[in-house]
Amino acid sequence: MLYRVIDRDDLPSLVAAFMERYEVIAPVKRGAGYVFSPVGSFDEICIDYPSTIASPKKYLLPPTETLFEFDAVENAVTDYTEEVRPRVLFGVHACDINGLMNLGSVFADPRYPDPYFQAHRGATLIVGVGCMPSEHCFCNLMDSEEARPGYDLFLTAIGERYLVSIGSVVGANILEGACDVREATDGDRIAFRAATRARQEAFNPAIPDIQEIPMLMDAFHEDAFWGELGERCLSCNACASVCPTCYCFDIRDTLDPGGVSGRRERVWDACTSPQFAMVAGGHNFRPTATERVRHRMYHKLNGFLATHDRSLCVGCGRCAAACKVDISPIEVLRFFERKGADDAC
Ligand code: SF4
Ligand code: SF4
Image (cartoon, rainbow, N blue to C red):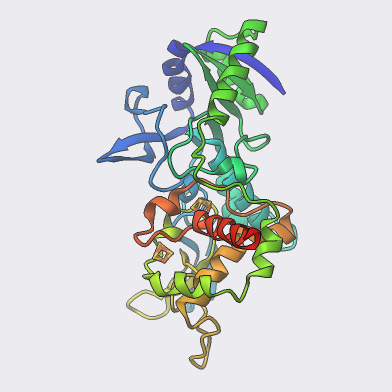
């Protein structure tokens, strides 16, 4: 990995250089929170944001995406009717970069490569930025505190400078052309170490660090705890909407008024939805909220790990902030902590 240093004052030039060739998506203030949104200048960007309400996932996996259009009279199908824009996702935190990597490992699976996701991903540069954890963050427990691959540039603030990790030739060239770039000194490296340590020490100590989560998930699969969560769950799907790694979708065909042409669309779905597991004939193989919440938590903390060697949850904490009834992986970690305390008695 190559490292360079730029001044904080260089950031507007860097963003302007990206804007010459790309649409820039970055964190901006919206009401009481922050969202990823297209920006027209650096001044709109809140680079030191705590977290955004939703992740930047929608720029690679849109909530509704036309996959193809069809015409029964012409017997024709037209692919890729959606525009694929060259974009830069600017100011993405490490947890979200890891979330996008997880999506990539699903949609780039060689057995079922998804050309739509891959087209968006191939047209997108990612510029990460280091952050300080907020109340709900637990990326440190999900091995997502750092983004190793998955970005073109990654900026870590060290005082009035940024240590820039360079992840691609494209990113390096734009950085070199736009900023007064210099080699990192020993002083920069020491400042980077101090910044990393300060970040590690800032995680909420009330979120328990539980080891062997998959084994505990298997051991407590039938525990009454899941019923308690199920009784509280409102089936609102807010958790899935904000999550950087929820990728379930539905497919729907929409006919034009004449009934001979139309389009096939992919739309976000959520396993917390009561209809999600409804199949032909009216059978629902996950009919209760208890089964649905439990399934979501198992996929996040157990099932994905078995097939992809890492947890699907990246510990961004958004679902903990979004859920009105306090259901999140943090509650699962606390449950395991209580079980450990019970066993010790
Ligand atoms: S877990 Fe919370 S956010 Fe998710 S569907 Fe249930 S009530 Fe809504
Ligand atoms: S499950 Fe919750 S904490 Fe984990 S990645 Fe999704 S939104 Fe973030």
